[in-house]
Amino acid sequence: MLAKISTTWKLLLKLLGPEILFSSLKLIHSFPRSPSHLGLMHRHEHLLRKTTKNFKIATTTLQSTLLLLLFVPLIKPAPPTQQDLRIIYDYGTDNFEETLFTQDYEDKYLDVKNIKEKEAMIKPDEKSHQLQKDESLTPLPPKKENDEMPTCLLCVCLSGSVYCEEIDIDAVPPLPKESAYLYARFNKIKRLTAKDFAEIPNLRRLDFTGNLIEDIEDSTFSKLSLLEELTLAENQLLKLPVLPPKLTLFNAKYNKIKSRGIKANTFKKLSNLSFLYLDHNALESVPLNLPESLRVIHLQFNNITSITDDTFCKANDIRYIRDRIEEIRLEGNPIILGKHPNSFICLKRLPVGLYF
Image (cartoon, rainbow, N blue to C red; front, side, top):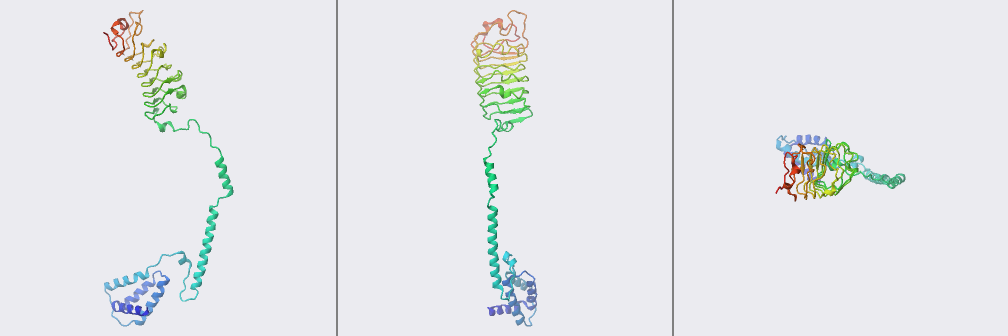
């Protein structure tokens, strides 16, 4: 081994010169050292001093590059570990093996201590375990009836308007108290009750088009004193409930309503009603006591077979003129309107329908 080292140094001295080698050794001494590198460096330095003679100084860039390539693998410091930080290596002494033995003992002792500390941390305290057990046995508060998805997440709420369209609900959802307009079209609602609107007195418009409504409690709309528009089109209704007094529009077309399902005074007190849509039902006659305020009456495609002089006019008052009515539709009914000329004498426009 020493012979190979001596040969290597002689070759380097011939190629590089002693000054470059000595300066490089000084540079190497300034780098962090590991035990394996130190002994080798001392041996190389000793042989260099012993074999140095008067060589010419080489100063070319190629020589410096070769020196760098030869020494970089030897001087690269190893990454520090816990052993390197705690062990003090003492080359040239007899205590090296004793130091390693002591370090090994300390490592084992620390490992055992760390394991015990981790077990102590993981082991649950008996009191905390009992507390967790008691908490798990504590009964949860009963779920309230309205603890469902909030209406304004299920529907769309915009400044007093609630849009619950085509979301497959089967009942009226809880509405914000400030709601004024509800659009619950094309769902699966089957029944309307007074409870659905009990706490929403400011409603002005309700639209339940395209549901499955079969029954409506008579008092459903009794507290809705501000309701102006009520649409119940395209449902399964057989009769009409009591209607709120301020209605201006009522739409119940495309249902199954028969004449016996409409009470005699259903429309009598609706002094603001302007638009009445009862087409495409099963009516056998025109509803009684229609208010003077009506402008549009749609009764087409029913089963109306008879009409009287008092249906739209007043038989005892030949001077009476009903000037507000703009449109009456009676087509699609099994009635010949030409047989009842006195029934339309008070109207400005004749109803739409079959006359011959």
